[in-house]
Picture 1 (cartoon, rainbow, N blue to C red):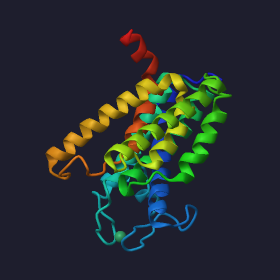
Picture 2 (cartoon, rainbow, N blue to C red):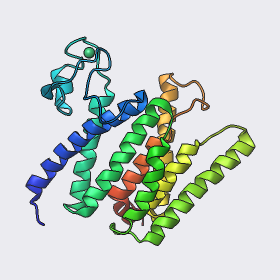
Picture 3 (cartoon, rainbow, N blue to C red):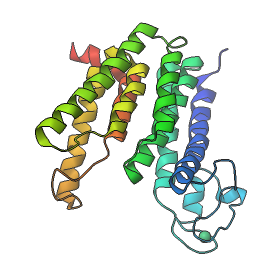
Picture 4 (tube, rainbow, N blue to C red):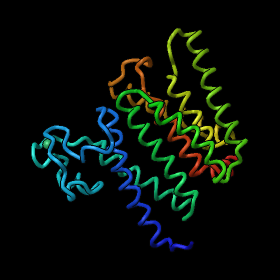
Length: 255
Ligand SMILES: [Zn+2]
């Protein structure tokens, strides 16, 4: 099916924003232990149910000037930030892949990664309920994506194996956990998604971004030492996203 880009690109942004709104609900309800299906969207402060015009992705945050219309409790910047990110990722996928099954498949996995990352940022946990089924689904997706199942399988095994090795050596030498077990589990999913060929760019870019963030945290005075935990999951997810979007271009530039 052919859809002109003049329609597909804006539609992809709107789809991404709406999905982002749903991801916000997933993150919030995971953090508070509520069901995803019930009750409807409401203010966590006063329980005020959101009307349709208070529930428009991104725009409502600005209409409401970042506050609940009933109790004036301020709305976390996390909500519009996640929605904007989801819209941008959807557009980038649309531009890179065009309309088709690959676009929707990666959009689904980017969604899982976005939800897991924002949970990790809040409570330093990458939920097993996302990473483990995500790993199985990423492997199955190799049968419909332009990647062989062998590459996907090796990606998962090598990626997670490498991180397990780093965790064990770190623990043996430094007596502390440098990497969480959640980081190893998400590598199963990310390795399966990018294939073993994606691991160098994934690991290098996420380590570089993690290091920059650690330095930034220390400069900002929020973290006193390198021992202060910084969630690594979002950087790993971002590394995989960078590879999926621009991996080929990065290799060509590098060679
Ligand atoms: Zn309220």
